[in-house]
Each structure stands twice: as C-alpha cells, then as structure tokens.
Length: 308
Image 1 (cartoon, rainbow, N blue to C red):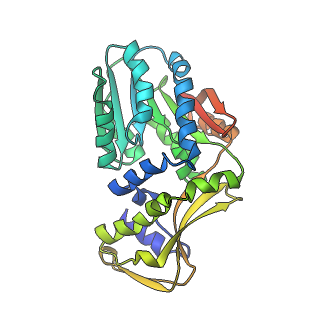
Image 2 (cartoon, rainbow, N blue to C red; image 1 turned 180 degrees about the vertical axis):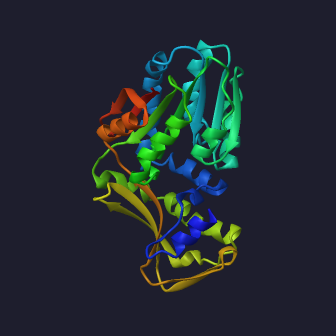
Image 3 (cartoon, rainbow, N blue to C red; image 1 turned 30 degrees about the vertical axis):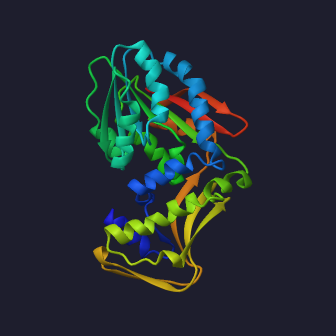
C-alpha cells in the first residue's frame, strides 16, 4: 500500500488507492451513503437480489457454501443465507473485507441464523478469497460480489478480476455479480455529491486517515469534494480539489507535497458497464453467464456466472 500511495501522490495527476477510503470510519460513512435518497443504486441492488435469489439458488443445487467480497453489515448476505438455511442443515459463510468494523457488524447482523457459521477474513477481496477456509467435500462455493463494487475497478482491471476469481474456484462453483449499467450522467452524479454532504465527508476522510496513520499534515479546509463524469471512460470520478495553494508532509513516506489552486487528488472511480462486455469477460475467464436479471427503471444487472 505504501508504494501505491507514494506513486499516486508523486504522479502528474495525483491519485490515492480507493482502498484507503474504507477504514472503520469510512466504512461507517459508506453505510450511511447507501441510505441516502440520492444513492438509488443501493435500493435497486437490494430489491433485485431479493426478487431473484430464489431462482438463482435453484440453479445451484446441492450443498452450498457462500463467500462475500465486501459484505458491509451483512444485509444482502442475509437475503441469500435465509433461503439457504431453509434448504440445507448447515451453511458456512465467509465475509471478506478490509474493515474490521464492517466484519464485526456483519457477524452481529447474522448471529441469529443458528445454522449459519460466519467466518470473517480481514483482507482485500482476492487475497481473502484465496485465504477462505477449504469447503467440505461435495460442497459448491458461491461468491457474492454485490453493491456494484466492480465499478470501483479500473475498466482494464475488470477482466483480470474475472480471471482471478475463476482461479480460486472449482468447476461448478459460481459468482453472483451485481453491476450498475450505463445511464445518463445527470442520474448518476447526485449519488456521488449528495445534499447532506455525507459523500463529501467520506471522500475527505481519506486525508484524515493519512494524517492519522501516515503522520501527514493535510489541511482538510484546503480541499473540497468534487464528483466528475468522464464520458469517454464511462465513469464517475471522485476528486479532492485544492481551494488554494497548500502543502502537506507525509512523514511515514518522507514526502513533501505541494498543491496549486484547483489541483486535484483523484480518490475513486465508479465505472458503468453493459451486459455484453460482462458476458465476454466471463467467457474469456471460464465463467459462463447462466442467467442475468435486470432492473429497467434504474438500469442494473444481477448476473450468475458458473465456473466451467
């Protein structure tokens, strides 16, 4: 992580790894963001999962273990685990997240499901998937990647993500993936610049974290949150824009930084996709799309990929 931060902050377009946003405070702020009226994707994602999970599970017969990448506080996992608990005598659920607070919240939210054994793995998505406990013989594995979290990968990284997930699976295992689809920028941007300012606090918290964990001296009042639409790349970008000339020292990395008025630090991207490219990436990586469910009012897809 240190080298990624160093490389990003010394680049011509200063940039920070988006994983820095998700410390305990950042994860709590993101949970709040999902409840905002502007963040429609969260409600549509949950509703589509609730409406489709029954059919999805019928396509995956037999004993099933579940792994979720980035489970938040476990609300969506519960929609999957409750019908599984009714179908099989015991279920193992592995939650993978970089935030200890999120993992603890997930465990508490699911603790009343007596036949579900919950294991938390503090790790990045792919590292955690490789570290997930070995499943019992004869059990299939279902990987959940919900909340349109694929949007946060650079588009060029998305095919590699499919390949990496497939490498951690056995034939017959599956991935249930939700992705926000292409739509007009005017519908998207309010979700990243809400009226209450929660997303702005979430974004600026990355500087709070650098100050706390890396001995940095960022003046938060010198930066403002900004959401931009990049039409060519089909993504929303979150930036922190310098309101005036300012400087910061990052003690842990021995960096001296200067910012001109208007200069930005790019903190996160949120890409939009179409079903065609998702299916191609799946096929090329050995994950065949068995079925996709879509919402047309707010275009979003839930797709079930089976490892071949």
